[in-house]
Length: 276
Image (cartoon, rainbow, N blue to C red; front, side, top):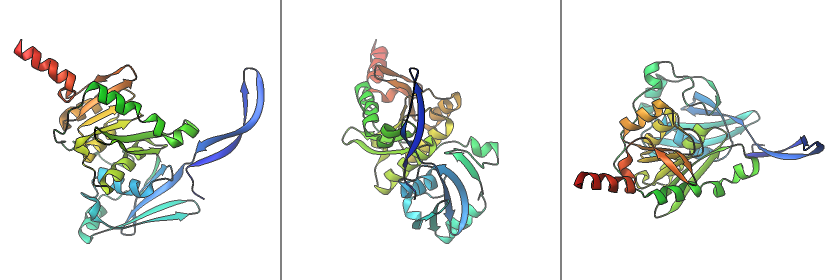
């Protein structure tokens, strides 16, 4: 049975005292993504929100351009894993046959099976200007994530990706043992609900590597906020993609790495400097 959380017997040793008990830990399951009968990738992930994962992975990997390109999607639960079976139009299926990869990737690996340097560091899509946000909105958005992480509250062992907008607050949040998977699930959730990502912020509980920027660009969000620092390549990619990249987001503030003009307070300072 594929469930996101399992209760496991465990022993413990704390403060010089041994005890027995149970702990809730997240499940990790092979997830095979297939298109028109052929396996494209096998990822390890949390068996929850799998339709979102299938759609989001397809979008952020560039396999499809729209959720409407998937003609049918079936989640098939097997004894040793789960198959996400998708059927595309004939032309789309022919295109991916040239780049199909048969891989067993580690948890949420963002670039497993990539067979060229150029593909690994491919340019991200350029996002629209979108909205600007105040520092208070950014901090409110980030602080809204933790209370909604139901799996992490039980296990303290999974990542989350969320989308926040001024009008709706947290509109979608997805969790997974893999940070890339969590963001793919969020991408799928937004695409399936026809949410306009240019009106809000993508929030991550993980570090920001280049793949996370590429996926956010595919989503079309103008601002990416994370609790941890980005890599240098992630910063360069965000700069080229027009994404406002914010890291080290804590209760007392955050650090801005690219396109700071979308943060309203910073834009106001720039105007004052120009006038002066």
